[in-house]
Image (cartoon, rainbow, N blue to C red; front, side, top):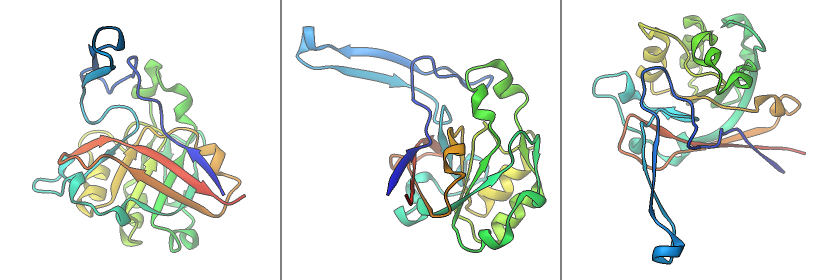
Length: 206
């Protein structure tokens, strides 16, 4: 087996969605002074590679801490929508959809991460595409761009309203394209929150 990390590193220079606050790092202790290092971090929960829970867009929706581990791990396949500005139902392999619980959408947009264009001109998911994921019982949809849609966030609400978790800002999905046997693990800390940074790893067959 082989493991592929699909997560952007969380750094001091982490780009954020326009209007969001940048993470603030503070060196609270050092080995030289205290005998150990401690960093304090102040950050929004929707920074970098992160997961949206229903409460992000749905009044009274469940928090990340409400979801059991089995909702966060499962067989996956990759929708190859490279360089498409809109991902539609025509891009979806319905047969593959019936055999997985996690869908990853590859557009190649992650190559712009850290550039102004990344949050300005990103692709979107069509509402029919999102509806098909809901009907198929998909648990997680992961994207290599910053959001499945724009205001008024109909796709967000469709997915999260049906407890399909959304992972945004993935990277390196092209590495999964040669594989059929893919298992994805998307495990944030158990925050009682509407979202959180997440480490996403794919396990693939040799």
